[in-house]
Image 1 (cartoon, rainbow, N blue to C red):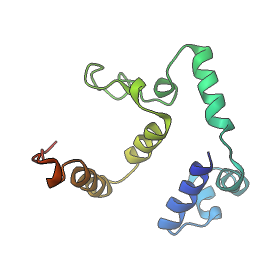
Image 2: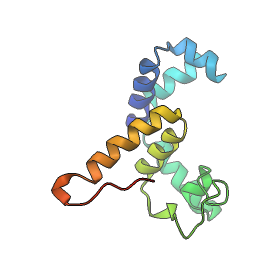
Image 3: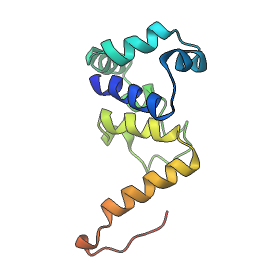
Image 4: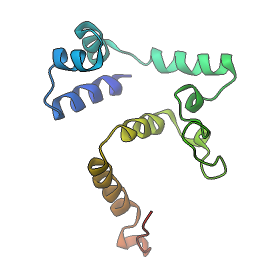
Length: 124
């Protein structure tokens, strides 16, 4: 969860927001924002996993990544194969603007389809 705190700080600063401004924008208190930036620990993810097991659902379903809710055919995507870190990144990607997503996709494509691999770049 330390990574979560660091990411909250990083994205907040990228958007030039203070903790107070983010609190106002989200409807959360400044104290909660500070807590997640500084004091959050891995306990949350461990507890999330236990809750998912107790409910007999996957973490993606618990986080709202189910194939039904995203209108993705389950044959195309099996979110249960993704690790928690990847799922968190996917959730953050979903919040980006179309332009920001485009930049990220270009970076991913350049890494996945390097000339070293001898593969041609495909368009989605």
